[in-house]
Length: 532
Image 1 (spheres, helix red, strand yellow):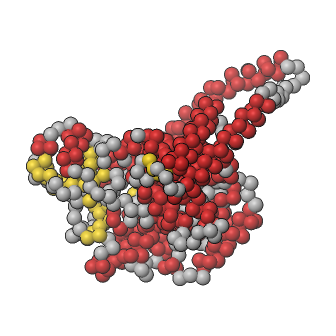
Image 2: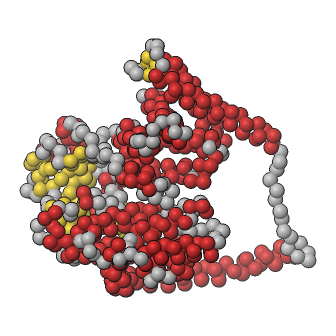
Image 3: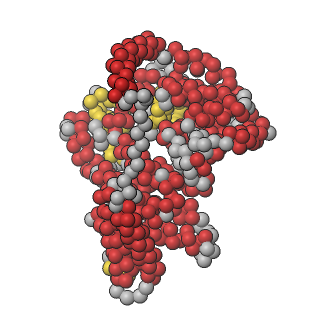
């Protein structure tokens, strides 16, 4: 039931918070570290929170490195669900009986994860395919859990106003929205088809296509490809060629297509028997519009050329630095970053790490980095790691310098200048059409008001200010009582006496229930007002 699930989430959150506080006060040993405990807490809450933690791991701009590393280790491998259930989901999703779709469907899954499991199968025309089936009830579970997490985030910002600097409500909403996109296999199928079309003429890349008419929100059927994982030791002799092909493919995705595979870890990459790199799992895809691609190209070029002033301007244009900037201070930070790389061999340079360090310079200004740039940062870290697996001596920045002009020229050719000029002419014509009416309205206003146009200044009413202060005080007291009860419940978990739900002492359960009731009252009041 939702109430027990909510209670479970609150209990795990309070246990982690209390443990972290006690470690900070050195009342508990520092090992295992809080970052590992955070990961274990998310794993204990199941699928939604595993995916939430994986999505949160891209927030390198606000999370410490040890938390990022811990979240990247979240285990997404779970026990498969019954084949009979998978068949029911396939028939429900595709609208036809399994025997009409396949001559053979493997009962043992090829792989199982928190979102879906994959079965091998053979179509009636003889083609070998894979069938990816989403776990039953997953969407409902995600919505229920994320709704609870959103409420908890609202309460947390009331109790600890400093959290607002990190915009937790926006982060939770963003992750919630993207989790729902990630588990929508219709959306993934569209991404696969776009990549298949874009790389149809590339002899170095293979994208297994989707089978027409065998796609739904919960089921996707795709061509089956085989090969060796890209981190297979037997590929080392061919590593330099594969690394070059991989970099070419990603430069094309980022700067020409403006659409890129957002999860290029070794598990999603393998090499076919004919030496092509095969990409799998398009659940995470990033998008960059043409303006963003130009700004990103400027950032990369400024970094390669070690130009601090240009790098500062490029970072501001990208939106990873903002607010009221002390340009001299930020320039000093960029000079330090550039100096650190100047002392390293070129093969050890990392554009992804430099991008992260520049992003973290803007933390104090509360700059909210666009999601697609965060996905890009994650993809760059994974891509650089893959390149170094294939060829530890690969000169990534030198390759970027050499190939960037050709890539950018190709990107410019992709621009539809006819559409651009047509839009400019339409905007200019609309402005010219509206200008007389705007001038007429301005002259009439001038005539009515005499010697000049008046300036109206509106001040918000102060009526009801004391009622607002009373409500705020009541909410604060309620939040403190709820927090105290949560802490009390956690401390009573080892108490003797009768137990409920199998493991929770009665006194602790009462404390948690009262705390939850106060919390729900508080959230309800906030929701009605629409404001914190």
